[in-house]
Amino acid sequence: MSGSSDDVPSSSGPPDRQTLRLLERRLANDPLVTRTEYRPDNDEPRVFEGHVDAERYPPSIEAARLDVRWFTTGDFTLHFVETAATGDRWECRWDRHPNSHNSRLHFHRPPSGNDIVDLELPPPHPLDVLSTVLAAVEGRIERAWSEDAA
Image (cartoon, rainbow, N blue to C red; front, side):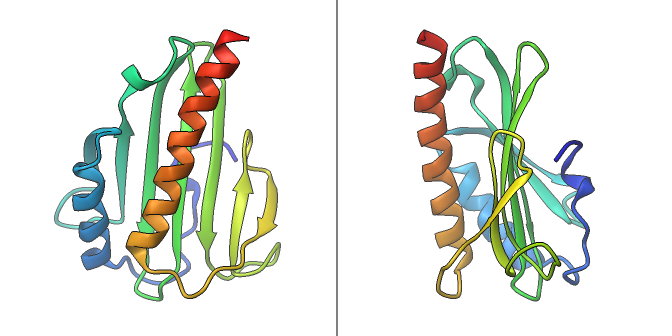
């Protein structure tokens, strides 16, 4: 699962700009996040990036971000990626979209995102999905400190 969030196909329909803006406001107020940014821009948001505060990580991690896409169909992609000082990436992704590899709702497991498992959840509300992802990011930060100390 290499590349940027632009690698994720947008076959799930048009972006849900209202939901993207709701999630961006929530993420912009989270203490984990230093800044958010829409791509390609605020007028035509297709994805937004939430940049995680690198100061929360051990020195071995240089950067982390969460790329969020939400579609009018209710499909979504939340892609979390860390970049180590060595250039290595650690990433995972929560997805809801039609596909041939798993159920519509699935998770791409870290560290590469290549191992995919089905998820069983009730119809997800965007803020609930974001809360789940942020809790996972907090857990990952704790594990990164443990791994760095080992």
